[in-house]
Image 1 (cartoon, rainbow, N blue to C red):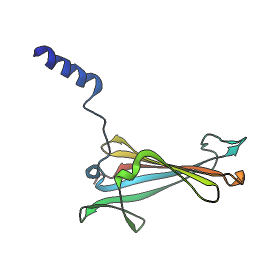
Image 2 (image 1 turned 90 degrees about the vertical axis):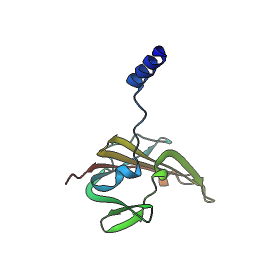
Image 3 (image 1 turned 135 degrees about the vertical axis):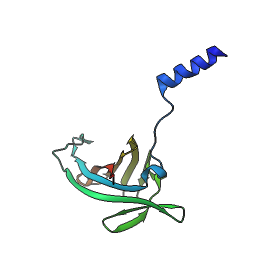
Image 4 (image 1 turned 180 degrees about the vertical axis):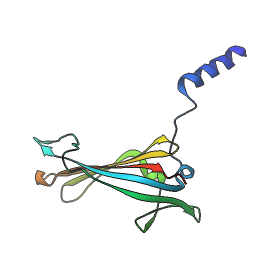
Length: 148
């Protein structure tokens, strides 16, 4: 029995109590967020790496999360929208149109601390007919809790 307890304590010490995740309860409140957008150039049949010097735009905004009628809401710049945390699972979705355009989306939310998180969205569009229309964009929203 002592051996089992000791092994459990060692496992907790080595691996922690589990992965920290962003939860709806954590999000409730006011946040100061920095928004950045990056583009990747299409060259030689491939998207290049995201480059801070190519297409980066940043701005800061205030964001408020709250619940109403058992729904999580987000308010920013006088716009209010429902917020679904499951949308940011980190899994990619791919769709193809009848016009030969394939789009891929990947949305994730990362726990940094109980007072900081990052939302990352990567959008990619490939046109089979005209490669000059190919586009890949990454947006990042890094938010820190506003303490009163």
